[in-house]
Image 1 (cartoon, rainbow, N blue to C red):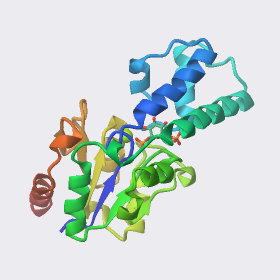
Image 2: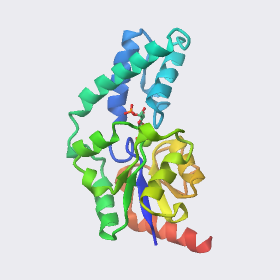
Image 3: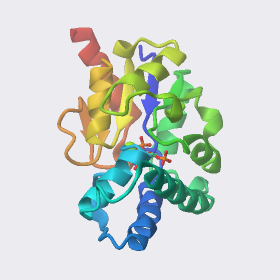
Image 4: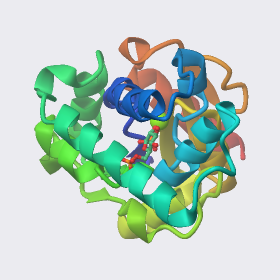
Length: 222
Ligand code: G16
Ligand code: MG
């Protein structure tokens, strides 16, 4: 049987990418750096500091700021972001996700969150679904970011689940890579996720019965 299901947050449970985009947009504007949705694509699943490096690099300003100034910029972005996510409500849970969570809970399978975001607990509370997850990884305690499997392995361990018997759900390529490296079954949501064991176009199509059946078939053949 399935021992645990581990969800990514941004892009799977809710679309916080939009708020990350607006917050980084303000920083980029202040620095006079061009910023658009395609740059934002590269920030998905990537840590705050790394996101800043990508944005500065895009504007050709990667060596214009000291470590201190970069920390200040990242802090400022987070202030904008925290202000924006106060607007989140249960209606911001992506289509199909509540149903999926409910079906998994009905089978008493533990649920976890593996998000690169240090704001993940705040976001889960704002969406009023924090009580449905047995464990949410603390991003600030991770030594290595996705595609390293560390965060998924940490969540499996906390849920006392064997990675080989657990499922991870992600929308980012680096996230799928992390799930596979952890030895878990990878479900992808979105485009360009060929490495996943199973992919869906968007969250509204996710079906627990299909995921479980595909996972069980694969594991029985292994
Ligand atoms: C999310 C977003 C990233 C963001 C990261 C860190 O990852 O996709 O764009 O940079 O969290 O967020 P924060 O600045 O709040 O710590 P995930 O793993 O939930 O997709
Ligand atoms: Mg994501």
